[in-house]
Structures are given as C-alpha cells and as structure tokens.
Amino acid sequence: MASLSGKSSVQAFKIGPDFIDPMYHRLATGRPSRNLDGFMMDRDTIVSHFKRASTNADISVVEGVRGLYEGMDAIEETASTAQVAKYLQSPVILVVDSRSLTRSAAAMVQGFKSFDKEVDIAGVILNNVSGEAHKTKLCRAITELADTEVLGVVYRDSGKSIPGRHLGLVTPDSNTNLEELNHNLSSLVEEVDLDRIKEIADTAPDLVDVKETHCNSDIGKGLTAAVPYDRSFCFYYPENLERLQDLGVKVVTYGPTDGDELPDADIHYLGGGYPELYADMISDNDSFISGLKRAHDEGSMIRGECGGMMVMCQSIRDIEGFSHKMAGIFPAEAKMHPRRQGLSYVEAEAMYGRNAISVRGHEFHYSDITVKGNVGFAYRMLRGKGIDGSFDGLMSKNAIGTYMHRHALSPDDPMYRLVSEFDRSQN
Image (cartoon, rainbow, N blue to C red; front, side, top):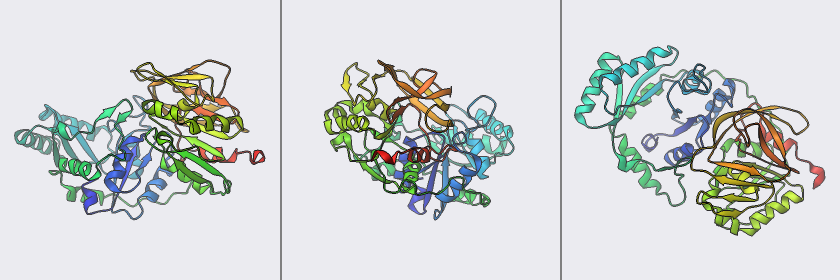
C-alpha cells in the first residue's frame, strides 16, 4: 500500500474485525481504512461500503484475515476472505509463506486454486524467501507445476518487522516515524511487480449498485457525544463515529490519558484499546474518572466497549498485580491475564430497551471481570464468552459496558439505537 501510494491514490480495506492493521493502512495511504466483515455485515452492505469508500481511488487493496478460506467454523465460508472476495468479484493475490518450501509451495497453490473455483486466484507473492537460489526454485515450481503467475517475492528480513503485543501489532502513535516506517515497508516489496498488480486489479468487473440499508435521520440533532481518543482509547471503527455525525450528533474527541478533562456531553462513548498500559495516568486524571462517575450518577448515557468498560469498573488490576482506581460506575474489578480470555464473534440478545433485538459483534480481550455487587446485564450470550459465559453488558442507570465491539454497518445499527434511545426529557 505504501509503495502504490507513491504514484496512486490507494483505498485500503481489512477483512474481519481489526482495529490495528487499519491504523497502519492509514499511515501508508493517507486515507481511512475500512473493515469488511461477512459476519457483522450482509452482502449488500459490504458491496455498497466498498464502492462508497473506493470513490476517487485509483486502486483498492483488501487485506485478508488469516488464511484465504478460514471462516467462523470448519465448513462454512462466513467471515472468510474468500467470501468477501466473491462478493466483490475481486481477483485474489495469494501470499505464500515459503520458508523451507519449493515443490510443496506449488502443491499448496494448486490446492488453494482447486478448493473453490469461484475464487479467482490471479497470482502469488512469495514471502519469507531466503535468497536468489530459493527464489529461482520457487518461481519455477509454482509457474510450471501450479500454472500460476508469481508476482514477486519478499525476502526474509526480521529487522523490518513490526513489533507486536497482546492484542496484535504495536499501535502507531505520535512518535511513529511515518517516513521511516513507509520506507522500510516499501523496501520489502522492491521485487514485487506493482504495475502487474494494478493490471490484475483492472480486470475486476464493475459492481452493480445495491440499495443502501441504513436509513438517514437527524434524530441526534442538538446532541453531543464525547469520545476519548488517545493511546488508551484507540479501537474505534470510523463508521461508528461517522454514523453518529450522520445522525446529527456533534462528536467531540479528547485525550484523558494525557490529562484532558471530561467534556460536557449528552453521550459518552468509550472505545477499547490499552487502558491497562496507562492505568496510572488514567487514574491520576481525576476530572476524567470522577467526571464519568458524576455523569453516570446524573443519568447520562454512557457506553463502554472492552477497554472502555474496564475504566467504568471500580479498578483495573494490571499484569503485575497492581490495582488502579477507576470510575466505579460498576461494582467490579477488571483484571489482566497473560493468556487470552476471549476471542470470538459474538451473537447476543438484548435484554433492555423498548424492543428486544439480536445483535452481532466480536470480542478480543486478555482481561476478565469480577463482579462484586448487584449489577444487571444488557445481553444474553448466544455465541461468545462475554463477561461470564452467559451474559455481557454490565448495566447501571443509563450506562452499559460490554466486552463486545459492534459496528455501525451491522443490521442492528448500534449507533442509531444508541441515539434513538436517548431520553431528551432528562436535559
């Protein structure tokens, strides 16, 4: 993406639920990256979202998730890269981990091509190539035995990898050297034929227009939503904030990790991220912590997702065992663990509001929640772990905190539901 952006306008997409990869996409392209998810979105939504986001771009690059055919289970293709590729009628470039392989790489490519004839595998990029001799053998094997074009190679170079941590890649921040990052990444694909990739992209057919599924409304006109957006709170789908604005809500962002005060707002939307890494800084920001509790006590609408929910608890106990005071909206403690506590697509049934609805989302967390008092739950789990395996969504007054992340382009449209349920009589 960084290399293509040198001469072209590139629109990036990421398949599946992911917050961190799109941050790097944006650094590489200068445009917001968009998620396409076959579980949280229906086909028409994926197609219309793709077309809308690709407007004025010269090329769209869609990064897959896991293996090409990996989906929600062992048989169905739902939530797989292959599913979205078929929805978009997009040619696929297969990236093959070629470490210690030659003829077996050809067998793998041939297997992927024959597995689903509706998936158009137009070429391969060979990753983890050790040198020129390895490259020569791989190219000959795949070209002659799998009848597939090799579009280039990426040589093994651990010095140019991006470091990771417990929720994925280390997130880029204000200290990230954008020029150096893009230079390092671009140098990895010096032997990838970008012009040929653009030619392959041009073979994709035009997509037929589909009906937009979300209704337009100004029901949020006059309302303000405060959204913490910094090192601790950085897991937001851009569509969620855009949807609030489309509904007439004024969105105000701030950085509580660096001491910003809690803004006056009708709605407080706290996304996920890494509050456990900066728990001492968050705890020291009394305006933020006490302000959230006061907003809750006064009946303000508060929504927290994963890390946002953790901050709504009484405390966060970090991986070293130190406890940090938080807002105390819920009588509960969030505790970090060295091993993953939840990773799943989520289906749940809402148990609050005027109308019972089914919702879809995803969870990914290394913490768990210990409830220490009486508390209600917002959702009954049909799939996924949630807070205790059966329920998700701690509730108190007009505040809800969940492990579940939801997307505005889901059929249940959580942002519309949030704004439509705002009680203007309390203002």
